[in-house]
Length: 364
Ligand code: NAD
Ligand code: GLY
Image: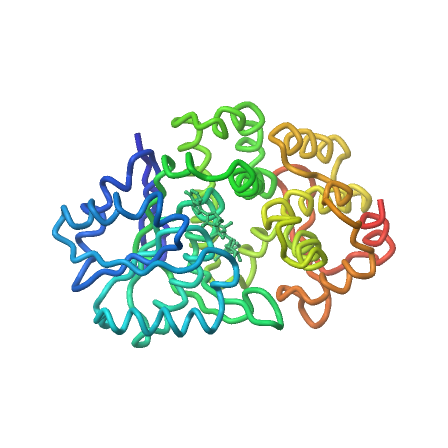
């Protein structure tokens, strides 16, 4: 069972395939766009688990598949690694009409997408995301980036993939904590604009997270459908795409205050951030308390953190959080842009938030 979703971007339209066992079919899916040596770039964790089946499927389809294995972890999204990767891609003989495959989580997808965007002024790439976060978020929409000491994801470009292959079977090897962190982004799609999907998740998330194929395929495919529709309408985030940042401004502040460490994964920050966004909306009289309670109950039920006090270690102070939030790259003219809610499934952006309400939510 698999689903196909299209990101409708005119001549750059591309499909997202979602289903169990798709790596075995990747050769046939990639063959029409493969030319010359096709490097599969991955990290060593993923290589040990999922690289060989992908290479075998590609070779069986007659693709000259090669491999480049990088270190796992955020530090790989750096100028140094980008330079090394571009060198390796050039050494393999990737040319302008070639194709690069990113096999991994958001770190590999972001780095490979960026390298593909600048190599020889742009070559094609395909995403084979292996984390839930990458399947529902980072592999779709064409945002690519590396990080620098000044901040995360500050150097990058938009470069859409030609194809996304989300094999939900690979999620079976993902550590539970990473799976749940990715799930925060799934819940986000319901909370930001699809109350019906949120209700479906309330009833089915446990099944999906336990690996039920049909439930997990639907959760991933529907998330991609929501994101694909938003990206098709606002590719460069001049408006609506900003709604995909629900929970991210708070989450980014928390991640920065905890040093982007294992204390708080990105998705965990997004889970707490979504709750803070709903709490703030509630405090401003915009969103009913019952919707905040529903969001908290659902995130707790799947095992995600929902409050700043859930972050292990010393509690980040309000001033430190505010300072980090002001440095978010989505801040405009020094003002923090928030995604707030008028209830579950109804969000909007605003920079008009009274400072005392914000402080109260961060201190509670
Ligand atoms: P990640 O790529 O670091 O993967 C998390 C860990 O899981 C790594 O250790 C990895 O080796 C391992 N792993 C991956 N797949 C596995 C599998 N199937 N089985 C076992 N282990 C596996 O992290 P992530 O959460 O996927 O991505 C985070 C990155 O994504 C961040 O850099 C973030 O900035 C970026 N991001 C980008 C976008 C975008 O739109 N481009 C959106 C959201 C996040
Ligand atoms: N992760 C948010 C976006 O792609 O716009």
